[in-house]
Length: 130
Image 1: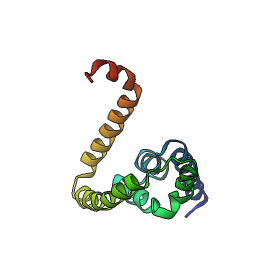
Image 2: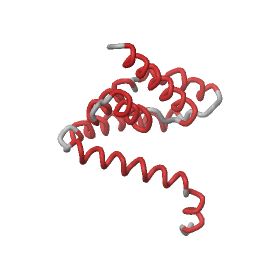
Image 3: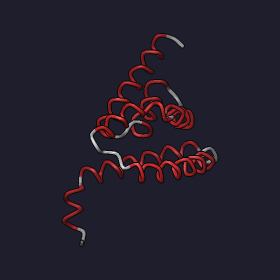
């Protein structure tokens, strides 16, 4: 690893960690695009590396801070974690068998849909019944 790569990794880690702590995002939304942009990783390598970073100890302090303030529902977290493991395994098996260009497009569409939902959330609430 050269100095540029080390600095890029530090920047990615800091940005992902900051945004994870502030907004609960970090992996797919932050690390994957930054690894592609700054490090030249391909989609598969960026996704695999991002998943490898997100092991339990990485988020423990941030989660503990939310827990101290009473913002953690442990029952929900346990169920989601269990099925995250299963879904992550199945998703990884699926992803490595998809053409990288197709996977990139799926990823981009998902990010765009998420961004549009966040931007237009208030307008959608007034348009939808209920």
